[in-house]
Image (cartoon, rainbow, N blue to C red; front, top):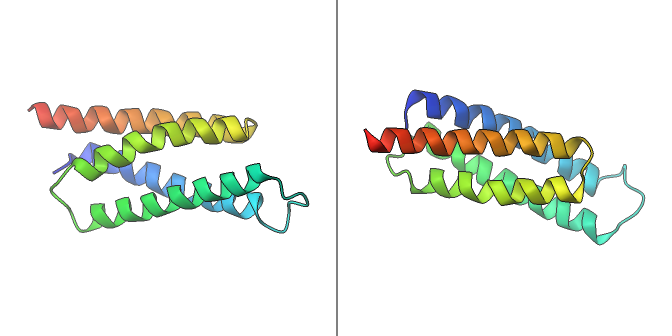
Length: 117
């Protein structure tokens, strides 16, 4: 099972990422965008994928799953996705994506620390 520090980092990341995904989905395909370029559809799909992974991660944390494979998979898969979001919309989303990358790296390190003990 993941340590308490790791769970706290994961919950902080997941809550932040869920809000971030909702904001991206509402602004990339919502009523506020007049143009419908392909980048908006890609950004919407990536945000929906992140929201799905985040909801699964929160559910697994709540039911206290013993297997760490999904937590590694989720943290590792979110790193390139965060780079893609930063590249597609480099304004404020770039800084938010860098924060998510750092949180994912911290989560991977804390998962490895617990495993080595």
